Image (cartoon, rainbow, N blue to C red):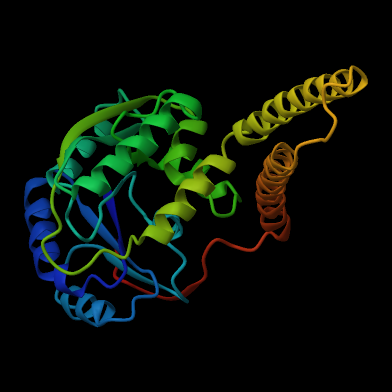
Amino acid sequence: MLSLVIPVYNNEANLPRLFEAINTLSASIDAPLEVVFVIDGATDQSSAHIGAETSRWTRPFQRVELSRNFGSFAAIAAGLQQARGTHMAVMAADLQEPPSLVLEFHRRLTSGQTDIVMGQRTERADGMMSGASSRLFWGLYRRYVIPGLPSGGVDIFGCTAAVRDHLVELPEHTTNLVALLFWVGFRRECVPYERQARQEGRSGWTLGRKVRYALDSIFNFTDLPIRALLWLGLLGTTLAAGAAVTVVIGYLMGRIPVLGYTPLMLVVAFFGGLTALGLGIVGQYLWLTLQNARRRPNYLVRTIDKNSS
């Protein structure tokens, strides 16, 4: 059985097309299909519409409601935890990723030649600024954090139950699920696709969420900011020492009767900014350490509605 995990957050307008896509997938796939809807604290009528639709289903399904909005990755982890299939796939409710990818994921996973299949974006029908910022982030992330990451980034994936078991056992807080797929290893394949434009509703993936996601993705998987700060501090200290020696020599030689106000202020501003930057970076790592030390769960399940497999 293939378990299809779909996180849902205020996707009421997308649901008719989503149900149609699921029916098409169910008729096309050569295995039982379990659909696991994870309601991630939605404030619209998504949960009610899904409940009304699934009440008529004979195929296996689960409707998992979280106690509040915990974020997309936490919702996916909750769905993977509850999924009962031998293979898993994740699909976004807004259908910006072609549902046909799920069929290809299943085909490759059941071949026994791979353990993880990822959708690799080759093109995206988003706005110019959104596309440019995404390419910049994933390009830098691929270069400096996870070299094996697909160049266009990853939004959806499929995996075996064994990989799922390892993923849900990891207790990390505010992490990047895609990066964890590379951390656990196993055999991986990529399927290229073109990301579609959103047809209904507005995305909950706001600028603030994107920035938080980028920071969590970086600080959870690399010490590069700390090392960059170290080298920047060494460089600044070296330059300051050189400047101090130059000033002292010039003063002793009588060439600097009055020390300049402007250079002094520039030096103070530079090292003040460097200190603030360093405190922010170190503080971010300390905050992540505190979050993981608390061992709070990444999500809480309020209710689960399911039928038999």
